[in-house]
Image 1 (cartoon, rainbow, N blue to C red):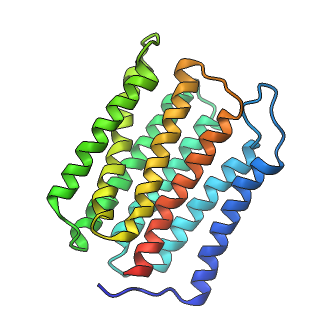
Image 2 (image 1 turned 135 degrees about the horizontal axis):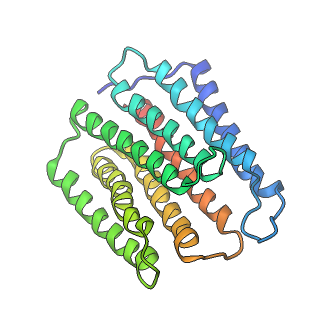
Length: 246
């Protein structure tokens, strides 16, 4: 499979967007002010704009790849990142609904369905379809998710609908990681998607301790974003790496 090399202008635009994302995310942490309950330094606007920068990156990347076979991966990933940003708006209370957690879970969940679709399409399109690796890695990550969900979310807590609903959500995130792992074992470029999906899962488990079990340790909000933000970046940047390596 020949590599598709981006021209210098396209590379500059894409790398510039990743640089802007890093400035917004990490700059918000470095220069932000710790809030009253000591859970976060990053202001809302830097978090939301860092996420939206990745949305722009994903759609511009898709535009650069139009009329190529790589759109089978770039298009679903652009949709997934867009839905992730909408989930961020829910969780930041910028979409005024009472059940903001359900709104966030729904948006993130459908976004991960898009990621999985992209991974499966890429697996078929580019001959990365070893069934043993695909289903074996998926099974491992699903088991990991169940154990982590039980320990972090379910055990020792008052059981609510959200506690139960978080299990299929955790399994969905783990499925993204599992399918990405199966691809990474066949093509090195997908290691970034694997790490990114794993960071996303870790971020949500940390967030779950805050939402469901009342964890309020110092900087927990920043830790969530310093795992979630890079996770999303590695997922969408994985398309760029895969195209570049061919």
